[in-house]
Amino acid sequence: MKFSQVRCTFLALAAAAALAACGGGGGADGSSPSPSPAPAPAPAPGPEKPATRDEAARFLAQATFGPVDADIDRLMDIGYAAWIDEQFARAPAQTHRAHWETRDAEIKAANATASAGQNEFFESFWKQAVTGPDQLRQRLAFALSQIFVVSLVDGTVGDNPRAVAAYLDMLADKGFTTYRELLEQVSRHPMMGIYLSHLRNQKADARTGRVPDENYAREVMQLFSIGLVELAEDGSVRTGAGGAALETYTPADISGLAKVFTGWSWDCPAFPANSCFTSGASGGVSDPDRSFKPMLGYAQYHATEAKTFLGTTIAAQATADPAASLAAALDRLATHPNVGPFIGRQLIQRFVTSNPSPAYVGAVARAFADNGTGVRGDMKAVLKSVLMHPEARTVSDTSGKVREPVLRLSAYLRAFPHASDSGHYRIGATDNPGTQLGQSALRSPSVFNFYRPGFVPPGTATAARGLVAPELQIASETSAAGYVNYMRDGVSAGIGITAGAPFNRRDLQPDFSAELALAATPAALVDRVTSRLTYGSAGTALKAEITNAVGAINVPAANGSNQAQIDTARRNRVNAAILLTLASPEFVVLK
Image (cartoon, rainbow, N blue to C red; front, side):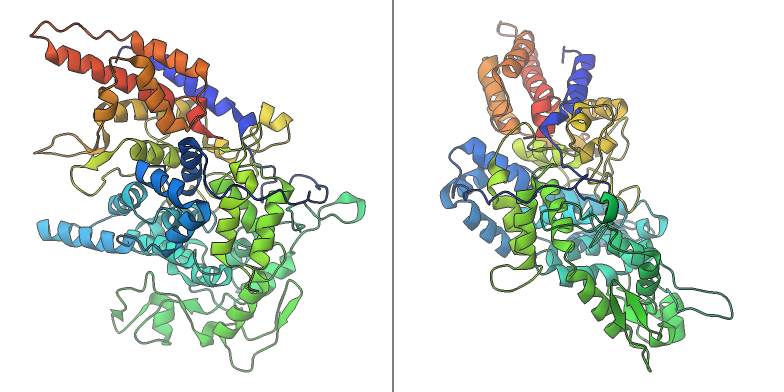
């Protein structure tokens, strides 16, 4: 292609800077940065169906890994609520664990000393993201993986990709149940137990000075349920004397809750043997699925003294009962008034907009409190409230969000049909910010995710307006250039790992036949490309700029012997139109 790589990088940096267009007002814990006034009256209900295909595509960009024509057609036909209900009823074509296990068997059949690893987990993630029929389920699982974080970057977690695949399956399954059920499955999953160190956590021992590990007790409150400060229903911060924010918990609450998370360890055939607790095996026998079966409570290692936290006391137990302690603790967390606005706001940020209004947060919090039939924490009701609130359909100078790198790639792969030569969608890890996306699913650098919900890019118009832009925490000049270079190569040569014979090319190859048919008319080509990637947000000026760049690529006149040169030039025009759109603010920022 004959266009400037420097220009592309500039466009990507401009996109990263165009952040008055997106946001999410809040502190690092997801709360609003300052007290907000009482919520405004609820706006009138939004439309039942999208009025245009661009409106349908914009909704699907929020609710899926990227719009495709079939989903646009279906949404236009049945409307928002019915489409969501259809998605609630859809099961995955294959679970992530089943994919990993199938690939492991294939790899072992070819080489008995080899096995599947993290790459096979990424295969499943991308296959489901690009082709899965249960788009809303998978999209929610990805969002929840950034709230209830476990990370393959951790050495022990990273050595268990089969279990991490099962963890993502659990999020996809329990994400459509209740928050209380989801929180229990997260708390008892061995990968979470390893990552936040409450697997094999033991009761206090005065003789040795041992005290229960407090790591999970702290994070289950700070990150997974109630946050650092008390919130009103609309997400605004509750304040006390002198206007100081009211903290949700104290060190004493952490210590009291930590006692609940003692005595939990592996599922084991000889449970509750001591060796099962300490090593997950007895007599050399262990459960081959122990890395993802819910942890069991070992009474002999569980604290029996009274456990006081968040204004609740679990009475001292004559006989240790880990399950009863856990149930009481999770009940307390799930009924805390902070959970609705705290979790609801983060889901709004992950799906729709970084800066939801207090009215939007309040509506989602009310759906969390009561789904209409008296059920608290119904995740389907919460998600429907997130996606169908009138503010989700509104475009303004503070609406929308920066598309994180994984969602940029998935939107591109779905906008232009891609086939996998291997059938496995071999994209692999894309962590490197200089040469790749700077992000891979479930490879967060810490339990605080890739970015914080209240991140404010310093010295920007976003900061000056009191807005936040979470995804910009992982944006830099290096990552902007790396993204453009990665997509430039991907558009030109395909995405993913290069396979050997018989293909000798990257695993995912695009079908640009519809675009190639328009290559002779740059304006028509650009109209199609920008429509598929920006859903009507590309303005006249941007399209004119891209059209001029595309038209500057010469397509030679046919002379009977230069068809190869003509085909190359037509493809270069298509490549240029797509890449310049992918690097534009109108694509990087989903309004």
